[in-house]
Amino acid sequence: RTPQERYSLAMPLATKVTASLGLRGFRLNLSVESAAGLDDLLALFPKIQAAAGQQACAELERALKG
Image (tube, rainbow, N blue to C red; front, side):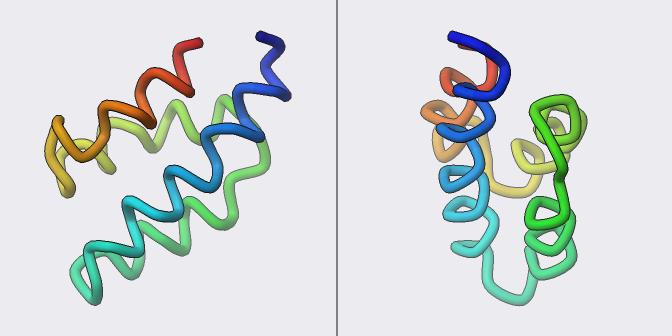
């Protein structure tokens, strides 16, 4: 997959994961929503994974890493 395809697939997943954190993930959700591309999402992924847990991020990780 191209980086753009991976970004298009990963963006809604990242938003879903961070939104599920409620107020605890509010700032992280804002960061995800301002991500301009795949590199931005990849940079945020460790923070998302730390906040939501590895299991909740498995599908997102597959989308990001293709």
